[in-house]
Length: 316
Length: 250
Image 1: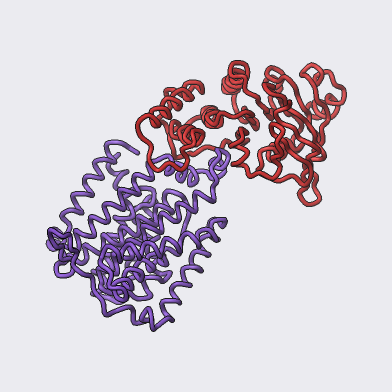
Image 2: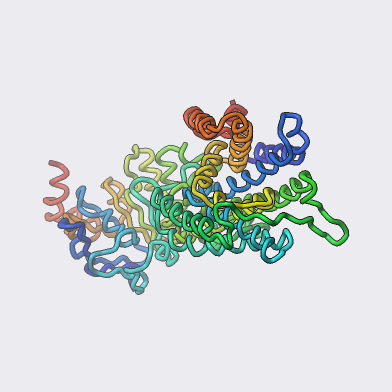
């Protein structure tokens, strides 16, 4: 949207992500942490498609993240599916759920919408929690792991090599993010931003608001489910916490922390969140209070998030 | 055949009767002004016609078709566009992007996930044309929220015009404006009516604007039609003098 500067930022983010496994070690991180940032970044950016670019707050996105995670994990465990089919199945399950639930809730607005997204989200949490024989219940779904991907001419060993998995995840991240960027700069994307800016005006330009919010919700859930599937693959494990509403809340925090009005903001928010979580939780159990403090300070002093602050600094 | 036909429309909010059995027609190419004291029900009448609120009873026909039960966005698709008393725009978007949204919707691109080549060039050309007509050619890149009141209103009118409406409804287009801005907006409305042959229905408080522009005037008072006629008939009507102009002067 803002031409050259936006383009430069894209290139900068691309370069940083391309070399993340290498510079991560130098600052005390490790490759798996880099992968986690990527995956949570994708989840937060997907949520932000709805939150930042359609102006609709969902507190239930963990449900679709978790459905992607369980869908992929169960496809591998029970069906012996390969990595890509497993991700596709996770996406399919989550997207179908989002289409049905989205249609039920799309007439609600504001806090009411947020409340029903929590309510529906918790349904899936309790399902995963209670249905021991299939989901592994509270202990999570174990006894499976991601498999190397066979391309015919070569095999990508995403199981044996952390770096191989990171780059595998980066390619999927890139495809998802490019698709979202393309959609947001399209006529369809402009109707979503129009709804965010002024719902009444958008309606009186002829936009059927509910249908467009529903589409935005489904697209957002589709991409968050890809993140969920990658998260299960990353951990070779998934448990009901991947579906629980506190994860939904964390995704919102990441988006707001990084800056929900900017495309890359949620990725930066996710990086701060995940890195802080990793660093602080090795020192104290109360890591969430540190994140809470950071969140309060950012919202208080930089209401446009970390990226918004950096943008302003660059302009000044 | 009339373009817009309202038949015995009433709207009650609880015990308050905001619109009481109003019937009227607007012919194609007409510029109709609606005047009346504050609280006469002018904006409520607009809301009934545009579909923002449903009438308690009565019917609204557009080009002979009953639209009483249609959602606002469907009425827009049939060719009914409106602006609001308090300007409704997309404040964080540029003037050009505000108009672009409307142009793309009118061109049937509202669900298009990617637009390139000829489609995009067509939209660009239409946006520049509307910017020029609205006197906003040099402000295309400016955030609408940063514009003056008058320019925001011009942008809103251009967005409605981008929809290529058959009926344009303007709710107090010059409200809260100074003389110069009022003049600019009145000139714009006149151009749209005279040159483009657009049918326009407007609510207006500024009598200079009303008597300069309108072909016919409908006077509302306490939700009822007090009088209807040409500007001359209205200005000579004792009823209107007493109930409206007299009151305003007092």
